[in-house]
Amino acid sequence: MTQFAQRLAQGAPALGVCLLVWGLVSLALAGEPLQAPPPAGSGPVWVVELKDTVNPGSALYLRRALKEAAQAQAGLAVIQLDTPGGLAESMRQMVSDILAAPLPVAVYVAPSGARAASAGAFLVLAAPIAAMAPATNIGAAHPVGAGGSEIKGPMGDKVTEDLKAYAQSLARQRGRPLELAEQMVTQSKSLEANEALSAGLIDLMASDLASLLGQLEGVTVATAAGQRVISGQGRAIVFQEPSWREKLLSALANPNLAYILLMIGLAGLYFELSTPGAVLPGVVGGLSLLLALFALSALPVSYAGLALIGLAVVLFVAEIKVISHGLLSLGGAAALVLGSLMLFDGPGDLAGVSLLVLLPTVTAVIAFFAGVAYVAGRAQTRRSVTGQEGLIGQPGVMLSPDKARVLGEIWRVKAAGSLEAGQEVVVGRVEGLTLWVEPALPQDRTHSEER
Image 1 (spheres, rainbow, N blue to C red):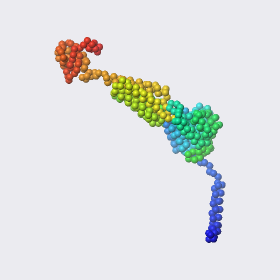
Image 2: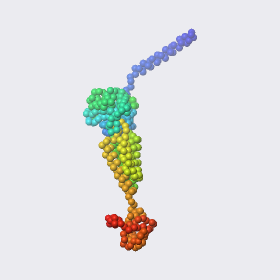
Image 3: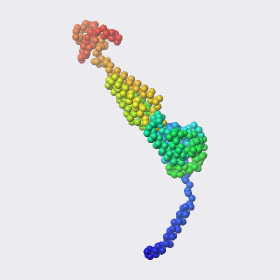
Image 4: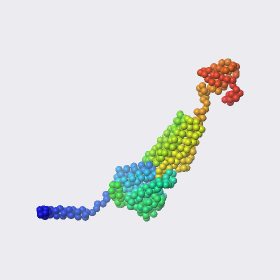
């Protein structure tokens, strides 16, 4: 212990010097002022006009626009929003893109009269900066099912709780009132611009884009790349528009249009297969079916509904081949109706076919399939009018005891009894190039005169 104490005493000066140096460095660092957040990019202000439903096309458009804004070192991206809502999955994708943006993003509900309803309310909650123009509103984000119907039972509770938690998480991250975020989902609460500003749901009100940029000048905002200071004064403004592909996807993302295209495609191909050589129905049907499949790939489709529609087509085709006295057609009609009702399945304002579209379309398609099946069935059961079978039952006139004129041609004939020249006969059967005939009855002569 004595040696240890002596060594400690010898090392005390050096230890004291180290502690003194460490203390001075700590005081220097503690007294150093915090650095200001770096400014945002030196590029232009990017304005993304989103005047559509929330669908896969608009989600693709927003992702591309934000990516191009980041590449151009934009100082600010303004999402000018006016939407009635849309699909939940597309909304989540758009929210993720806003949260992951490395530049300041402002969601601006404008112009006056615009709205950020349903899925659009989540975009406002996710924005680092939320702004609204006068006479606009936000909210009514309660989830709905196919065709706007209420999602009932445990599934409805599950979807509502999921979206409520999602809205609260976004509100908590942006420092917005959790209770209002919850009420927009659970009670379909909607607020106009002044109410939203007073409640702290949005950050500011601006009558136009110039007013918005003026109020945001010098504001520090959190981005995925850290804190950034907005400076938009004197910078160019770039207005973004969706590309033709994004516009096409947005248009086709409407379940009503996708359903009509699917029905036209199936009807066209069915007509082409039942009556080969028509060409035009097959071309129109093929193009419609391809567009329908493109749209269905982006929508919440129920495979059970799609399978039932496929079964309906199979049953309609089978009606042509099998004489079922209409039973197969009835089964196909039932499968088509059930499949159409079950085709789309998912929460969102667009997730379903309107009954005003579904009922007339189903009626027209069933009538079309049944009509084609009826015509094709009659064609198959009709007696042949060509070849050897077409000669049976045809009238003729004897020219000599062993020759007769039938359908304008002279044939070698045979009969069970003797026949005289000029006598009217009817073909009974055909053996090679010889016709077996028999005397025409009075009713055969009547049919011959009608022909």
